Image (cartoon, rainbow, N blue to C red):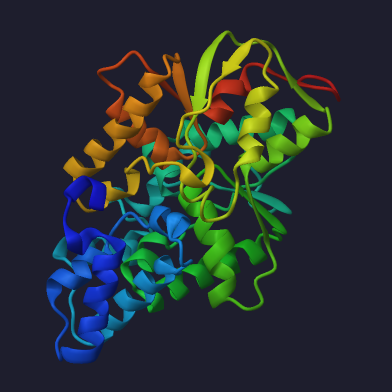
Length: 350
Protein backbone atom coordinates (compact mmCIF):
# COMPACT_ATOMS: atom_id res chain seq x y z
CA UNK A 1 0.00 0.00 0.00
CA UNK A 2 2.87 2.37 0.73
CA UNK A 3 4.49 1.72 -2.65
CA UNK A 4 1.14 2.41 -4.31
CA UNK A 5 -0.04 5.46 -2.34
CA UNK A 6 3.25 6.98 -1.08
CA UNK A 7 1.56 8.01 2.17
CA UNK A 8 3.29 7.67 5.54
CA UNK A 9 0.07 6.45 7.14
CA UNK A 10 -0.01 3.62 4.60
CA UNK A 11 3.44 2.39 5.62
CA UNK A 12 3.83 -0.24 8.36
CA UNK A 13 5.84 2.15 10.56
CA UNK A 14 3.35 4.97 10.05
CA UNK A 15 0.44 2.78 11.05
CA UNK A 16 2.25 1.48 14.12
CA UNK A 17 3.10 5.02 15.25
CA UNK A 18 -0.51 6.12 14.71
CA UNK A 19 -1.78 3.16 16.73
CA UNK A 20 0.64 3.98 19.55
CA UNK A 21 -0.56 7.59 19.57
CA UNK A 22 -4.18 6.49 19.70
CA UNK A 23 -3.52 3.98 22.48
CA UNK A 24 -1.73 6.54 24.68
CA UNK A 25 -3.33 9.90 23.90
CA UNK A 26 -6.63 9.70 22.05
CA UNK A 27 -10.09 9.04 23.45
CA UNK A 28 -12.05 8.37 20.28
CA UNK A 29 -10.53 6.35 17.43
CA UNK A 30 -10.22 8.38 14.22
CA UNK A 31 -12.08 6.85 11.28
CA UNK A 32 -9.06 7.30 9.04
CA UNK A 33 -6.90 5.11 11.28
CA UNK A 34 -9.28 2.15 11.05
CA UNK A 35 -9.55 2.49 7.28
CA UNK A 36 -5.77 2.47 6.89
CA UNK A 37 -5.64 -0.90 8.63
CA UNK A 38 -7.78 -2.40 5.86
CA UNK A 39 -4.84 -3.19 3.59
CA UNK A 40 -4.36 -6.38 1.54
CA UNK A 41 -2.94 -8.28 4.54
CA UNK A 42 -0.33 -9.61 2.11
CA UNK A 43 2.32 -9.88 4.87
CA UNK A 44 5.04 -8.44 2.67
CA UNK A 45 5.93 -5.89 5.36
CA UNK A 46 6.13 -8.67 7.93
CA UNK A 47 8.39 -10.77 5.70
CA UNK A 48 10.94 -7.97 5.28
CA UNK A 49 10.72 -6.46 8.78
CA UNK A 50 14.25 -6.66 10.27
CA UNK A 51 12.83 -6.66 13.80
CA UNK A 52 10.36 -9.47 13.11
CA UNK A 53 7.35 -7.45 14.28
CA UNK A 54 4.12 -9.50 13.82
CA UNK A 55 2.34 -6.63 12.10
CA UNK A 56 -0.41 -8.80 10.54
CA UNK A 57 -1.64 -9.87 13.97
CA UNK A 58 -1.31 -6.30 15.24
CA UNK A 59 -3.49 -4.99 12.38
CA UNK A 60 -6.12 -7.61 13.15
CA UNK A 61 -6.19 -7.02 16.91
CA UNK A 62 -6.22 -3.24 16.40
CA UNK A 63 -9.18 -3.41 14.03
CA UNK A 64 -11.12 -5.47 16.52
CA UNK A 65 -10.31 -3.11 19.40
CA UNK A 66 -11.03 0.04 17.38
CA UNK A 67 -14.45 -1.34 16.45
CA UNK A 68 -15.10 -2.20 20.10
CA UNK A 69 -14.27 1.36 21.16
CA UNK A 70 -16.51 3.20 18.76
CA UNK A 71 -14.92 3.22 15.31
CA UNK A 72 -17.13 2.26 12.39
CA UNK A 73 -16.17 0.29 9.32
CA UNK A 74 -17.19 1.67 5.95
CA UNK A 75 -20.78 1.31 4.78
CA UNK A 76 -19.71 -0.91 1.88
CA UNK A 77 -17.88 -3.31 4.21
CA UNK A 78 -20.87 -3.39 6.56
CA UNK A 79 -23.03 -4.42 3.60
CA UNK A 80 -20.60 -7.22 2.74
CA UNK A 81 -20.69 -8.64 6.27
CA UNK A 82 -24.47 -8.35 6.38
CA UNK A 83 -24.71 -10.24 3.10
CA UNK A 84 -22.46 -13.01 4.43
CA UNK A 85 -24.87 -13.40 7.34
CA UNK A 86 -27.89 -13.35 5.00
CA UNK A 87 -26.72 -15.39 1.99
CA UNK A 88 -23.45 -16.97 3.13
CA UNK A 89 -21.33 -15.06 0.59
CA UNK A 90 -19.68 -11.62 0.39
CA UNK A 91 -20.66 -11.25 -3.27
CA UNK A 92 -23.75 -9.08 -3.19
CA UNK A 93 -26.32 -10.09 -5.80
CA UNK A 94 -25.76 -13.83 -5.58
CA UNK A 95 -28.08 -16.02 -3.53
CA UNK A 96 -27.29 -19.02 -1.35
CA UNK A 97 -29.12 -21.51 -3.59
CA UNK A 98 -26.85 -20.58 -6.51
CA UNK A 99 -23.78 -21.86 -4.65
CA UNK A 100 -24.30 -25.48 -5.67
CA UNK A 101 -24.95 -24.96 -9.39
CA UNK A 102 -21.39 -25.94 -10.34
CA UNK A 103 -21.84 -29.41 -8.81
CA UNK A 104 -25.35 -30.27 -10.01
CA UNK A 105 -24.29 -32.65 -12.79
CA UNK A 106 -21.32 -34.23 -11.02
CA UNK A 107 -23.13 -36.56 -8.59
CA UNK A 108 -20.81 -35.69 -5.73
CA UNK A 109 -21.72 -37.50 -2.50
CA UNK A 110 -22.80 -35.20 0.37
CA UNK A 111 -20.84 -37.34 2.83
CA UNK A 112 -17.21 -38.40 2.47
CA UNK A 113 -13.94 -38.48 4.40
CA UNK A 114 -12.57 -36.06 1.77
CA UNK A 115 -14.70 -33.08 0.73
CA UNK A 116 -14.14 -30.24 -1.72
CA UNK A 117 -14.56 -26.71 -0.36
CA UNK A 118 -15.47 -24.66 -3.42
CA UNK A 119 -15.42 -21.27 -1.70
CA UNK A 120 -17.30 -18.21 -2.87
CA UNK A 121 -15.02 -17.37 -5.80
CA UNK A 122 -15.29 -20.91 -7.12
CA UNK A 123 -19.00 -21.28 -6.44
CA UNK A 124 -20.21 -18.03 -7.96
CA UNK A 125 -17.60 -16.45 -10.25
CA UNK A 126 -15.48 -19.33 -11.53
CA UNK A 127 -17.53 -22.55 -11.24
CA UNK A 128 -15.12 -24.31 -13.62
CA UNK A 129 -12.40 -24.09 -10.93
CA UNK A 130 -13.92 -26.46 -8.33
CA UNK A 131 -15.06 -28.70 -11.19
CA UNK A 132 -11.43 -28.88 -12.36
CA UNK A 133 -10.39 -29.91 -8.83
CA UNK A 134 -13.04 -32.63 -8.87
CA UNK A 135 -11.79 -33.87 -12.25
CA UNK A 136 -8.18 -33.96 -11.02
CA UNK A 137 -9.10 -35.86 -7.88
CA UNK A 138 -11.08 -38.31 -10.00
CA UNK A 139 -8.00 -38.91 -12.17
CA UNK A 140 -6.08 -39.66 -8.98
CA UNK A 141 -8.77 -42.09 -7.79
CA UNK A 142 -9.64 -39.83 -4.85
CA UNK A 143 -13.39 -39.97 -4.34
CA UNK A 144 -14.22 -36.57 -2.93
CA UNK A 145 -17.62 -35.35 -1.79
CA UNK A 146 -19.16 -31.91 -1.60
CA UNK A 147 -21.28 -30.55 1.22
CA UNK A 148 -23.84 -28.25 -0.46
CA UNK A 149 -24.57 -26.17 2.65
CA UNK A 150 -21.05 -24.72 2.90
CA UNK A 151 -20.92 -20.97 3.46
CA UNK A 152 -18.21 -18.32 3.11
CA UNK A 153 -15.02 -19.37 4.89
CA UNK A 154 -15.15 -16.14 6.92
CA UNK A 155 -12.05 -14.46 5.51
CA UNK A 156 -13.88 -11.15 5.14
CA UNK A 157 -15.14 -11.29 8.73
CA UNK A 158 -11.66 -12.01 10.03
CA UNK A 159 -10.06 -9.31 7.88
CA UNK A 160 -12.68 -6.76 8.95
CA UNK A 161 -11.96 -7.37 12.64
CA UNK A 162 -15.41 -8.94 13.13
CA UNK A 163 -14.23 -11.70 15.46
CA UNK A 164 -17.72 -12.63 16.62
CA UNK A 165 -18.99 -13.01 13.06
CA UNK A 166 -15.90 -14.97 12.09
CA UNK A 167 -16.36 -17.47 14.90
CA UNK A 168 -20.01 -17.98 13.93
CA UNK A 169 -19.06 -18.72 10.32
CA UNK A 170 -16.18 -20.99 11.34
CA UNK A 171 -18.42 -22.98 13.68
CA UNK A 172 -21.08 -23.48 11.00
CA UNK A 173 -18.57 -24.79 8.48
CA UNK A 174 -16.82 -26.98 11.04
CA UNK A 175 -20.12 -28.57 12.10
CA UNK A 176 -20.96 -29.09 8.42
CA UNK A 177 -17.64 -30.88 7.86
CA UNK A 178 -18.12 -33.11 10.90
CA UNK A 179 -21.70 -34.02 9.96
CA UNK A 180 -20.47 -35.03 6.49
CA UNK A 181 -17.85 -37.31 8.07
CA UNK A 182 -14.96 -35.34 6.60
CA UNK A 183 -11.45 -35.88 7.92
CA UNK A 184 -9.82 -33.69 5.27
CA UNK A 185 -10.93 -30.76 3.12
CA UNK A 186 -9.42 -29.89 -0.28
CA UNK A 187 -9.77 -26.41 -1.75
CA UNK A 188 -8.34 -24.52 -4.71
CA UNK A 189 -8.78 -21.06 -3.21
CA UNK A 190 -5.77 -19.54 -1.47
CA UNK A 191 -7.93 -17.32 0.73
CA UNK A 192 -10.15 -20.20 1.85
CA UNK A 193 -7.12 -22.40 2.42
CA UNK A 194 -5.39 -19.82 4.57
CA UNK A 195 -8.53 -19.09 6.58
CA UNK A 196 -9.45 -22.72 7.22
CA UNK A 197 -5.92 -23.90 7.96
CA UNK A 198 -4.56 -20.95 9.92
CA UNK A 199 -7.49 -19.25 11.66
CA UNK A 200 -10.13 -21.93 12.32
CA UNK A 201 -7.97 -23.78 14.89
CA UNK A 202 -7.62 -20.54 16.88
CA UNK A 203 -11.38 -20.18 17.41
CA UNK A 204 -12.23 -23.92 17.46
CA UNK A 205 -9.84 -25.61 19.92
CA UNK A 206 -11.14 -29.07 18.97
CA UNK A 207 -10.56 -28.50 15.24
CA UNK A 208 -9.31 -31.85 13.93
CA UNK A 209 -9.78 -31.67 10.17
CA UNK A 210 -6.82 -31.66 7.80
CA UNK A 211 -6.93 -28.76 5.36
CA UNK A 212 -5.20 -29.21 2.01
CA UNK A 213 -4.74 -27.00 -0.99
CA UNK A 214 -5.09 -28.97 -4.22
CA UNK A 215 -1.44 -28.28 -5.10
CA UNK A 216 -0.37 -30.22 -1.99
CA UNK A 217 -2.34 -33.24 -3.18
CA UNK A 218 -0.93 -33.01 -6.69
CA UNK A 219 2.65 -32.43 -5.51
CA UNK A 220 2.54 -35.56 -3.35
CA UNK A 221 1.46 -37.59 -6.38
CA UNK A 222 4.21 -36.07 -8.50
CA UNK A 223 6.84 -36.84 -5.87
CA UNK A 224 5.83 -40.50 -5.50
CA UNK A 225 5.79 -40.92 -9.28
CA UNK A 226 2.11 -41.76 -9.64
CA UNK A 227 1.33 -38.50 -11.46
CA UNK A 228 3.19 -37.59 -14.63
CA UNK A 229 2.38 -35.34 -17.55
CA UNK A 230 2.45 -35.07 -21.28
CA UNK A 231 4.64 -32.24 -22.50
CA UNK A 232 3.51 -28.62 -22.69
CA UNK A 233 5.57 -26.27 -24.82
CA UNK A 234 6.13 -22.67 -23.80
CA UNK A 235 7.83 -20.60 -21.13
CA UNK A 236 6.05 -19.78 -17.89
CA UNK A 237 6.67 -18.10 -14.58
CA UNK A 238 4.88 -18.64 -11.27
CA UNK A 239 3.17 -16.10 -9.01
CA UNK A 240 3.19 -16.93 -5.29
CA UNK A 241 -0.16 -16.35 -3.62
CA UNK A 242 0.18 -14.39 -0.36
CA UNK A 243 -2.24 -16.71 1.44
CA UNK A 244 -0.45 -19.86 0.28
CA UNK A 245 3.07 -18.52 0.48
CA UNK A 246 3.86 -16.05 3.22
CA UNK A 247 0.92 -17.16 5.37
CA UNK A 248 1.47 -20.92 5.25
CA UNK A 249 4.73 -21.60 3.43
CA UNK A 250 3.39 -23.31 0.30
CA UNK A 251 6.27 -22.46 -2.04
CA UNK A 252 7.85 -25.63 -3.37
CA UNK A 253 4.74 -27.76 -4.05
CA UNK A 254 3.53 -25.77 -7.09
CA UNK A 255 7.09 -25.51 -8.40
CA UNK A 256 7.58 -29.27 -8.08
CA UNK A 257 4.48 -29.78 -10.24
CA UNK A 258 5.50 -27.21 -12.85
CA UNK A 259 9.05 -28.55 -13.12
CA UNK A 260 7.68 -32.07 -13.66
CA UNK A 261 5.93 -31.03 -16.90
CA UNK A 262 8.08 -32.02 -19.90
CA UNK A 263 9.07 -29.32 -22.40
CA UNK A 264 7.82 -26.48 -20.20
CA UNK A 265 10.47 -23.83 -19.61
CA UNK A 266 10.14 -22.45 -16.09
CA UNK A 267 11.56 -19.01 -15.30
CA UNK A 268 11.38 -17.45 -11.84
CA UNK A 269 10.36 -13.85 -11.34
CA UNK A 270 12.92 -11.70 -9.55
CA UNK A 271 10.60 -11.32 -6.54
CA UNK A 272 9.49 -14.82 -5.60
CA UNK A 273 8.57 -16.97 -2.61
CA UNK A 274 8.56 -14.88 0.60
CA UNK A 275 9.68 -11.83 -1.39
CA UNK A 276 6.88 -12.15 -3.92
CA UNK A 277 4.87 -9.01 -4.60
CA UNK A 278 1.13 -9.12 -3.93
CA UNK A 279 -1.13 -9.28 -7.01
CA UNK A 280 -3.58 -6.85 -5.38
CA UNK A 281 -6.59 -9.14 -5.72
CA UNK A 282 -7.95 -8.65 -2.22
CA UNK A 283 -7.71 -4.88 -2.58
CA UNK A 284 -10.66 -4.91 -5.00
CA UNK A 285 -12.87 -4.94 -1.90
CA UNK A 286 -11.45 -1.54 -0.98
CA UNK A 287 -10.64 0.19 -4.23
CA UNK A 288 -10.82 -1.39 -7.69
CA UNK A 289 -8.38 1.16 -9.11
CA UNK A 290 -5.70 0.35 -6.54
CA UNK A 291 -6.23 -3.38 -7.09
CA UNK A 292 -5.81 -2.92 -10.83
CA UNK A 293 -2.67 -0.83 -10.45
CA UNK A 294 -1.03 -3.34 -8.10
CA UNK A 295 -1.99 -6.19 -10.42
CA UNK A 296 -0.51 -4.43 -13.45
CA UNK A 297 2.76 -3.97 -11.60
CA UNK A 298 2.99 -7.73 -10.98
CA UNK A 299 2.12 -8.44 -14.61
CA UNK A 300 4.90 -6.08 -15.69
CA UNK A 301 7.38 -8.20 -13.68
CA UNK A 302 6.32 -11.25 -15.66
CA UNK A 303 6.48 -9.38 -18.96
CA UNK A 304 10.10 -8.45 -18.29
CA UNK A 305 10.96 -12.15 -18.42
CA UNK A 306 9.59 -12.55 -21.93
CA UNK A 307 7.51 -15.59 -20.92
CA UNK A 308 4.33 -16.85 -22.57
CA UNK A 309 2.34 -16.99 -19.38
CA UNK A 310 2.08 -16.65 -15.62
CA UNK A 311 0.81 -19.55 -13.51
CA UNK A 312 -0.99 -19.16 -10.19
CA UNK A 313 -2.59 -21.47 -7.64
CA UNK A 314 -5.16 -19.03 -6.26
CA UNK A 315 -8.51 -18.12 -7.81
CA UNK A 316 -8.36 -14.55 -6.49
CA UNK A 317 -4.86 -14.07 -7.91
CA UNK A 318 -6.02 -15.54 -11.21
CA UNK A 319 -8.90 -13.07 -11.36
CA UNK A 320 -6.86 -9.93 -10.71
CA UNK A 321 -3.83 -10.93 -12.75
CA UNK A 322 -6.09 -11.83 -15.70
CA UNK A 323 -7.62 -8.37 -15.49
CA UNK A 324 -4.19 -6.76 -15.37
CA UNK A 325 -2.94 -8.78 -18.33
CA UNK A 326 -5.89 -8.16 -20.63
CA UNK A 327 -3.92 -5.75 -22.83
CA UNK A 328 -0.78 -7.90 -22.93
CA UNK A 329 0.17 -11.13 -24.69
CA UNK A 330 0.58 -12.94 -21.36
CA UNK A 331 -1.64 -15.90 -20.59
CA UNK A 332 -2.71 -16.17 -16.93
CA UNK A 333 -3.37 -19.79 -16.05
CA UNK A 334 -4.56 -21.68 -12.99
CA UNK A 335 -2.09 -24.51 -12.29
CA UNK A 336 -4.60 -27.35 -11.93
CA UNK A 337 -6.36 -26.20 -15.09
CA UNK A 338 -3.04 -26.17 -16.99
CA UNK A 339 -2.19 -29.77 -16.18
CA UNK A 340 -5.64 -31.40 -16.17
CA UNK A 341 -5.62 -32.47 -19.81
CA UNK A 342 -1.96 -33.49 -19.62
CA UNK A 343 -2.13 -35.61 -16.45
CA UNK A 344 -1.21 -39.28 -16.58
CA UNK A 345 -1.83 -41.51 -13.58
CA UNK A 346 0.21 -44.68 -13.09
CA UNK A 347 -2.71 -46.69 -11.69
CA UNK A 348 -4.38 -46.36 -15.07
CA UNK A 349 -5.39 -43.16 -16.80
CA UNK A 350 -9.04 -42.28 -16.37
